[in-house]
Image (cartoon, rainbow, N blue to C red):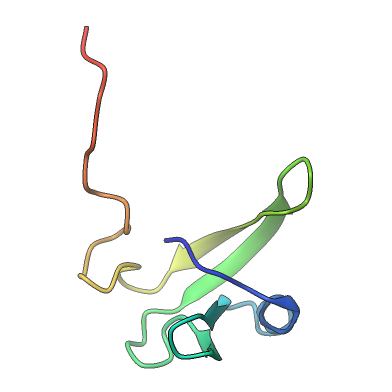
Length: 82
């Protein structure tokens, strides 16, 4: 999944070892799984080369996507065929 964070969300993620995000629509912090029980257990956090993106490597507790899918990325747009 893709989510937005801020400093407080990252600090809570590192403290609790579960993924926290900033909800732009609700304008508040949220812990992924707080209502569904499908938490993301964070095992590693890495950044890209210019440190403007974080990648949480997680073990999901149930589906990650709100649709019930394992991942939020399942809609094919294009694929090269040979």
